[in-house]
Length: 184
Ligand code: HEC
Image (cartoon, rainbow, N blue to C red; front, side, top):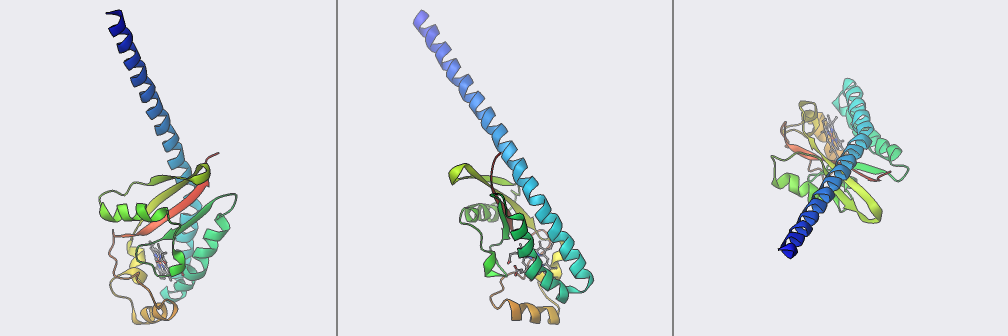
């Protein structure tokens, strides 16, 4: 009888310990998700601003913004152990290939179109990866939509002979933002 009770208590202790562990993991995951989102904010904001001011000068000029400013912004924010960028399953510029750990996450977004929540990935050396989907907006159609204006199409073909980044519709998954970092 006593033995059985002791056993029950032991089971209960294990269950409680497991519950505490899960709760701790959840809190850690939550903090990692928040940190990832926070680190991507300036990248997303600067890109959006650069694109908007570029488009004011006309879409052909705005191509230069995407070509030169997007990588420059990513480089300027990739410091203090932080690395970030954007990639796609249909790349315009092959240089926007992501680190290997991003690909399975991108694939899972493609396989489950209903799931657009940000994801975190544990990385070697105690680092973390964070991925967020990029969804096509009306603003993007002129350069990534079904049909491009002839002057735009010509310029894109000239700069990106292997372009695979047209034919998207509003709401489609265009790619992902990713960032790597160590939690403080
Ligand atoms: C003025 C044309 C233009 C517009 C508008 C535009 N893009 Fe792009 N996009 C480009 C060009 C050019 C590149 C290639 C940049 C480079 O060389 O790194 C690119 C690259 C990208 C990439 C990187 C992956 C790849 O294919 O190389 C993503 C992601 C992307 N665009 C998403 C968007 C989204 C989302 C929008 C709307 C908010 C948008 N773009 C609007 C021209 C445009």
